[in-house]
Length: 134
Image 1 (cartoon, one colour):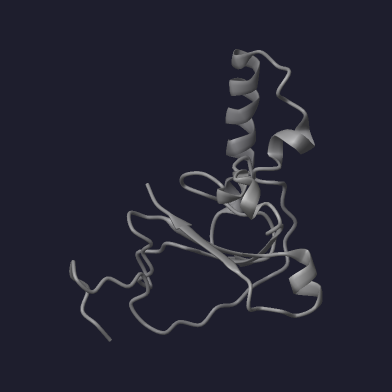
Image 2: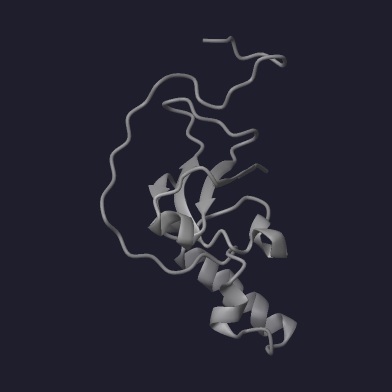
């Protein structure tokens, strides 16, 4: 395994196992579909900010590592760009953790997306990978 210095940086320090439990979640505020689904764009800036702040606080449990669900971003959802909007399914998300040693840049998160058609046909050759950090 390479050492962690400026020339050889890899975000995962060692091989790790993962375990999951089923949970329900709301669409994340960062998801490019949030405004389409909630229809909040007609509010005043102050009203929008107040609702956004409350909603973000309510959905903080969406962070972490997970299979499927709604992604969380430290910057922006890359699917705001039309060329990536077909990647509508989150395959999995890997968050940063000091322990056991996963760090995407400066406490970021990595997301892997797939199109619903590719998922249905079990084609894992066309996956969109995105990671961002603070």
